[in-house]
Length: 344
Image: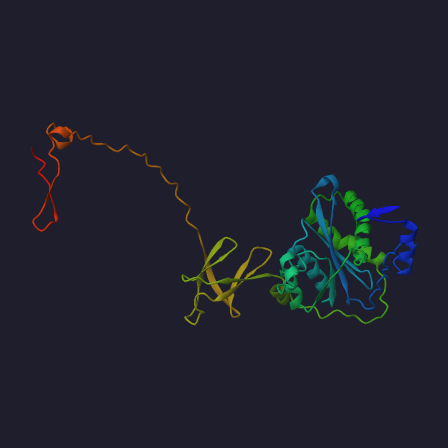
């Protein structure tokens, strides 16, 4: 028996009521069936990209991140070792892939902010979709590469399985080579490990057509793989960027007015360029003056003058010696106040 809100109903009666309303199910709810995604049929149609943090060098160095790219149709692999899963780490491995095979049509990534800018909680509540893209997303837009975000690790299973293979084989091979830095690890990856790995694990695509785009030139890749930030020109022709003060030096007076926008381009090696409407502008870096230490001036005590009243000062007289106020009425009946002098 169960009792709630003062109503007593037998559990068998409640079960029959629920069966009549189709609210009772003897079988448990089955899990949603997720069908395995089929591989793409063309080389370069879809490439999976992800980073794997692991103790790659064991006790010979710190933990690094292996940026791993795997072609969905052929399992062809390209990898680069880096310190973190940053924009430059993703850009470097993508650039290596493009230099070897060409521009892929799409990248399959996760929802990290390196690849896709996620909507904040406030934007989600308002139903807004962020329109800004990340620096890596802007690089892919220039290359006409579509970024597809995986909803789960299983959806990006090809690169996840590839991580496991590297964590088993690559660690042992680097241990035999006594590799102790990510620079040496990248040399080993490029000239030995990846060649042997692709010969063993890569497979031919279902269809022979190659979906990679043409390989851009070195100059075109340099113009693409860079960080671009808009900055406003101040009244004294100075822009601020990452704590730097850059004094612009326009070559002619056709230069844009103040308060307009310039584009600051930055490369991984620290090189900076400033462009306005596609034209490069020279600049010099201003050194901020170091703040001088303020010298504390000791506060001197003010000299207080003590003034004493004279003996014949009215303040020293008693009230007995002071004449009171005299009030008299005039002829017209008005009140006339006569103030006596202070002297006795």
